[in-house]
Image (cartoon, rainbow, N blue to C red; front, side, top):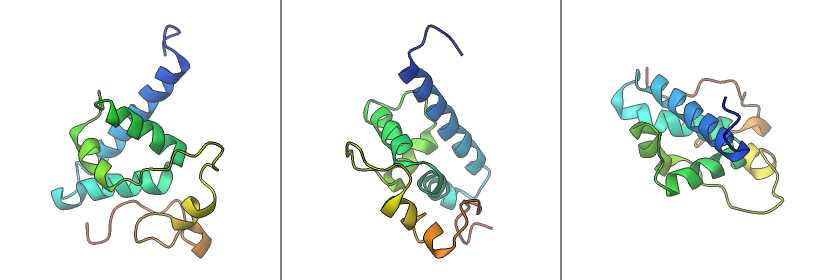
Amino acid sequence: MSHDQSPEQLVLDKLVRMANQIATFFLSQPESVRAEGVATHINKFWEPRMRRHLFEHIDKGGEGLLPLVIQASVLIRRPEAKVGSGVGVGQDAAQGAPEGKGPSAGESLSEPSIPEGAA
């Protein structure tokens, strides 16, 4: 880490690195489920604030993001920009991943993010 970077840039760099790591994993999966897999993982494990920062970066061009992250972005839930909204709580946490039951219905947050039928 560089001490020359702003805290905001350090956070952005980490989000880009994390998103790219997720995409790199899903590049080993069948092409038909790659984007869905990336989106499912981010929807399931990233809190709204993280997704908000990701979309702010994508809206500015998405520099440094792998093409698979950009492709998956249309499937990622875009959080509402509410001041003072809870992070990873309430309705967002209860919903879980698309087609998931969410933790309020007993779904584990540590379940694999590979979409059904990917095997």
